[in-house]
Image (cartoon, rainbow, N blue to C red; front, top):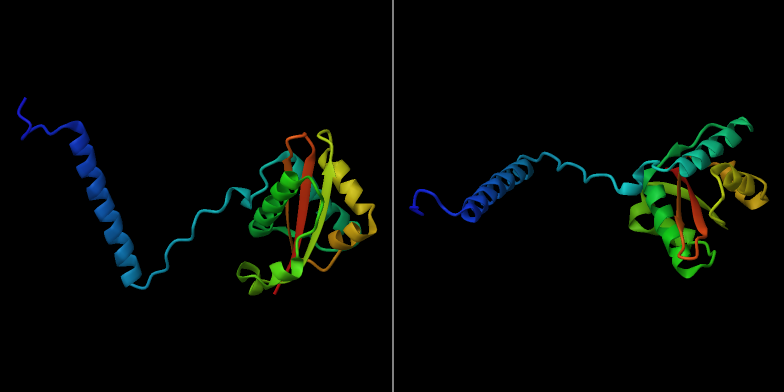
Amino acid sequence: MDRTTHPHPRARRLRRLLAIGAMALGVTTGAVACGEPEPPPPPPACASVHDATIQRVYDRVNIDRAGQGLGPLEWDGDLACNAQDWADHLASITTLVHQDLPALLASPGYAGTWNGLGENLLAGNTGMTGDTMADVWINSPHHRDNILGPFTSVGVAMTRSPDGRLWVVQEFGRRR
């Protein structure tokens, strides 16, 4: 076989990848040079409600608010990602402790967007349903204050610790 007319498949693949990379670089460079905004990054995995239990907790927040004549809270992916990070942290330390919300509010990702934050935490057994979680929170005065508070958005997340317990976090936010 003559290698000059039929290069090795790896060499062809490498040339094809380099050509694609060069085209992609040209498009990106062209877009920036023209002043067009770069496309937003893909949303994080925690940005949408992706679990039936979390969906139920979210639904119950709005059902409980409607029962008091309050408007619904919209789902916020950033709050949900923060809630997921905190739920994972709580599961790793197996202790319920609130975040420093004033510090979080002053952080770069929050400072220009939010002017109020609230947080509800819960640790429970594996068999807890979304309704059970919502009932625990709405029947606790401080947690109820967050659910019925002056917020515009919410994100909810949960995780399991190695011992099987559930760690659930509701993050509430009020947009500027």
